[in-house]
Image (tube, rainbow, N blue to C red; front, side, top):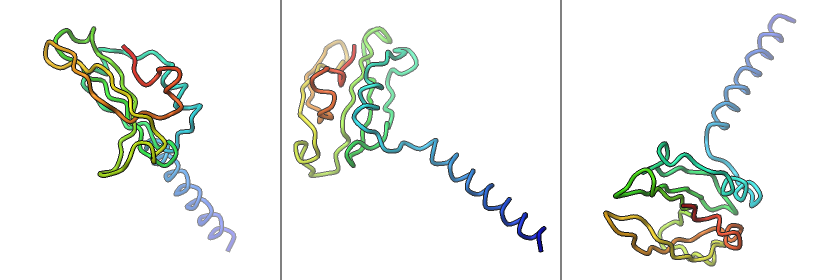
Length: 129
């Protein structure tokens, strides 16, 4: 009987550990402080150009960081952190603020409006060149 109990406990701990490993690799909850800390970090323009990274959920809304670039890459790669709103959702009701930023397109920079987390508005951390 003790061997069975030990085997069961070993199996439970193994499964629990596997579950934690899976969850750790998936985007999770992201509070305002963690979001601001991410926005304050520099990024590798070459490694990130053209990518979109799902950061997690802030106040229940998915947050992504986009790294668009065109023309002179990777030097002109920018980072834009914004909410990925569900179809038909309103930015303000999701807790965001609409901000228009310059996005590199071909040999130009065109204005595009994003719903950015309110926690990043004052610092301007939602847009990094």
